[in-house]
Image 1 (cartoon, rainbow, N blue to C red):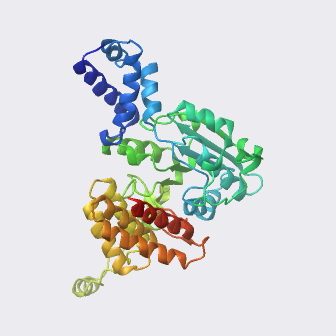
Image 2 (image 1 turned 60 degrees about the vertical axis):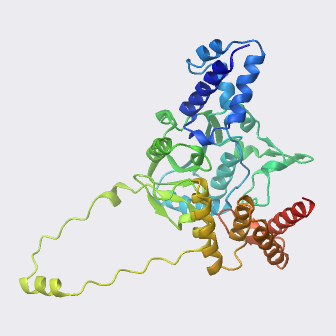
Length: 404
């Protein structure tokens, strides 16, 4: 059996391999998952030196096993429906105005394919006759790509937070659905790494979705990936990111819509060309009057929205500043007293901080407000959810607390 020191060396090297392949920051790499893979290899009788030697080579079975263990695959159909509504109502018409005869989409970090098929269904349903639709899904995890290619899904892929916005699947068995042939026919999947540029043979895209992927990346890896994504857009094309992944537009792109939408557009060459300077000279008297004039006041900044403030709080939580997030949520609730998503978030933060009484008081309020609303009423937040979700969450929290 290898010594403890040698085992720790293997574990450290395994984490380096995962980080270099995925771009994940160190805190996003599950130590339990890495340890489980390494321990299993040692239990098979392999030595630490053998494992270290294998980890020096790219693409080995051990490296693939580590990636399979740490990659996150949480997804479902029409997740964050507001972004699919933006795709249908804004991005597609903009692409059609550019005069192309095709609509091309890319789901970057597609996991098991639900997002890719959702994009395809949306484009098919909004494209006029004669416009070709093509959608690519890429992911680092080959096993999940195989699931995507089969196009068979269970209840976990269909959730209330993701309403069926466009025809997408057909029921084939109890709790099982199969992707419609029309959607399959315009969709393909391939292995791809966001730390590397997409091969030129795939072309450029009118819309790219890359959501809930970059949140695991190191800051340097985020910038590398965003650069590849931006360059894969056609001029005028749109990039949609996850709720808390960036707090400012990626280089070369401009924000479209409110911050919580996380939609960005690549400007066209015409937009990037500065207007010509006027050649006529103004009379000196006009110049003097302009100098003397008082500059107009700057327009007031836009009023903060509940969802925008909540999104900022989530970014602070992601960065490890839970105290700052709690303070921001308290201010949010002073201004938007019945905002259920922020109330639930603050209750969970209070629980983690050990302030159970404050957490319970907030959860009681969440339950009371949610109980007065129609169960299917969608509550706007970073992820729109029905009122019944908040009622059930509060009930579960209060019931568990009573048992403990």
